[in-house]
Length: 76
Image (cartoon, rainbow, N blue to C red):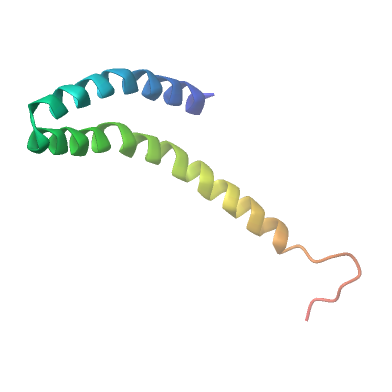
């Protein structure tokens, strides 16, 4: 329940981020790059911190099922 709420909150923050990016682009390429790096750390890093553990749990779940042998197979 916590993950969808955080993703919704982060998506709401995307709209002001696009406005700020537009302002940075109007001021020049240097300011635009600075805005992009700031937005990458402010928006994308928290999203990655939310999604990567969930992805790792799914990978662990998939690997856990691979360790179970089929019925009737002898384990060496």
